Image 1: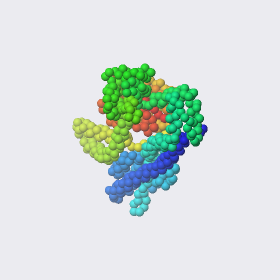
Image 2: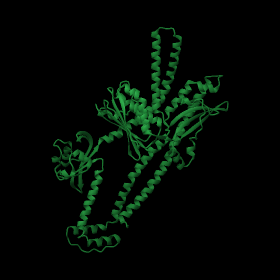
Image 3: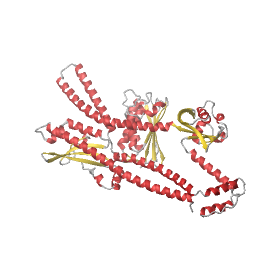
Image 4: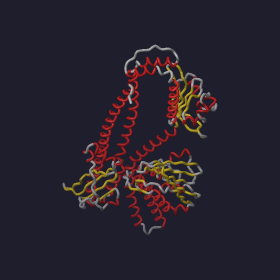
Length: 599
């Protein structure tokens, strides 16, 4: 297949642009992955030095005692160790081990007193080449460590080790990589457009032949014009056959028009074209829902005969045709499908040179924009909470521990006191423990988690959770109804985290039905790469204006609720690269839809 001049030039420029963009993106990714690892190394080194300083103070506070015992039993050191994990978004754990590798202190207390295997050093990721570093971040989820020796009298007696997850490092690299790919996606069409403009200048002589073709179309005689070059010879030869091919050209034009209409119909934004007399020329399927009629029914009709006389769009059309400069992104409430929705409306002239050809109206649904804004707001709140949790853990947890110890001492000293005094001490102890659970909830929600992926049978997991919650649900008059797809593929996931997420969902469904009812649990395969779990209750439902709020941290409509449960669900599903959404009708119940990838 032989390409024309314009196509050849456009192809060459596009390929060069693709090469430049690809090279720049590769360099950017290399630098970015190194910068992310460097920042993680600096941060963990700083935290390790702070823990080292706290360890020195702990030893000084216990003169004459065994240094290892002084480290193990110092409450301030333990509190500082746990708060350090909450401070860093990439840190999984922090520990202090003796010379043999046995853990003295660990942010996960169940590992204390046991040997902890050594992991690859985080500095090693800086010394490898770009491909190896990129492979380490993306091929699997691993944990790297920063190690700081602790010496006493110039002798090594312990070490401080901080674990960093590649899963969390990968997330930072991926976010910037997506931006680079977006820039590349914009650059290529712009390069193609520039190439077409350049080609237009190089084939200017063809315009003369185009004029001759136009005269043939109008039936006017033309004189033979000598031309040279391959493309010009081909065009000259086509002139003699142009007359009998006019009908074929008309059919080709109709086919191209149908193709263009099919492309525009795929747009999410509504598009409406009117001529200067306000007659409908065209609108796509997205706009059809606003117009309320099909294009075949309305083409050629005045827009005021198609829409209701009070329809807000008529005001914009009148304003533009009256000589206005156009309207850009005006927020308007328009009727659609029996209900009202918010749209961003733009209306402007379509011009050919200095002549107005008509009016174009663009309609953008604001629901998708609000969804993005909601995600941005959620991420901002998580970031703010992450900065606060380290302070909360350090400033609140240690005083709580001290208060609890003194309450226990008071109980011993006032063992023979009156029942009122004992009851007051029990109330104080209960409230201190409750506040400690709140602090632990903060840390559990914000602390980075490393996924332990393995094949999980969702059907079996959901059935086991139903059996676990059956006693509690029956006491509320609630029963579980399963509609499980027997061909559902297994998913690669962290079973414990998924169990926690679905327990929260099922408990919410039970609590939403104070008068009893059925909770339907349904599983389906959306396509070969996704599975779907739908949990539907028959409860009180959620008001439409509150549906977008239920996954926000601290939002709750239940008396005494913490507002953390569904936020934990959202985070766990997000860690698995899945999605979760809510559909609800007040008084008729709520459905939570969880989609997980099949890996």
